[in-house]
Length: 138
Image (cartoon, rainbow, N blue to C red; front, side, top):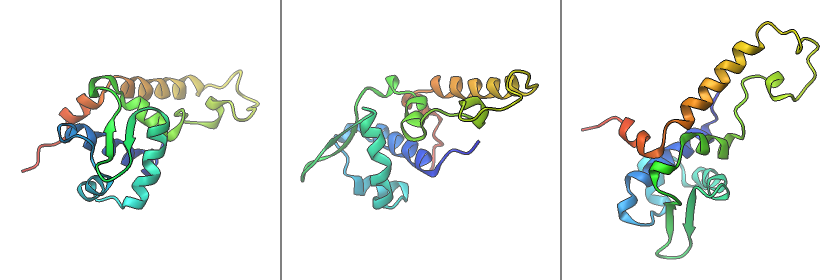
């Protein structure tokens, strides 16, 4: 399983908003500089977060970005689903093709269990928790 760069950046974006929440609405330029992500790429990252209702966007000179709900209520699962969609390890688990072995596959339960473990892990961590997991630098 690979997590897309867009998803990794979305998580960094959301943690940055959470960490600097007391500053009010944060301009994208500031976040891009702090996270070492191009502003142009970050603009692509925020669209699905906004569509999912995870952030609020205010345009204009005093505008910027903010998390839409308290950090303790937003799970990493929500962020990943906003950018990746559902996480499926294998096409056969998604049901996107007919596998002739699906009814007697000896490994399907193993992969489904791993998929469920990942989803459960991400669902159990909030943005607030992720902020606590962030390494303390200097």
